[in-house]
Image (cartoon, rainbow, N blue to C red):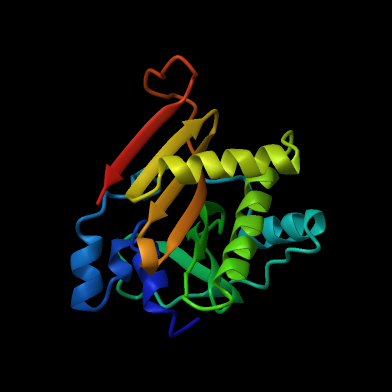
Length: 208
């Protein structure tokens, strides 16, 4: 997939600084923390992107994900395979895959707010997809509970270029670049966690 919107590249810089090819994007990405899944030995979900998409679409026929297409990553030193799926002009799904196995390291949804009469509808569509992604990994939640959980995560990550909360074997990530785009991601983590707070959760946040 070529010619991705610049704002999407900014969001991808959250997880792949090497994506920022032009100086402006590079300067922005260099101020972001290194994504945990880029570290040596970072885990993967036990599924390929094709398997995820098949299972997700079976459970969300009204919110389908089209085929993910590889992104040119010749200048990416992380040795991960990048791919993205266009949902609409303002909403994209993206991923990073372990080379060799093709297993998923991260799943991201990025909403690009475009001012105009359709912005509210496009935002609601993005929230619906993000809620569906959350429920895919936390199936015990009702749709309303999942939406409430998503809203809480987005609220905690509001204005932060990187916010992460770990719960069990999952990491929920929010990257809020304001009018440049909002990314929600879910990643696997190893179960050996640092000391948690009283709620059994661990948060990490870096503001603008």
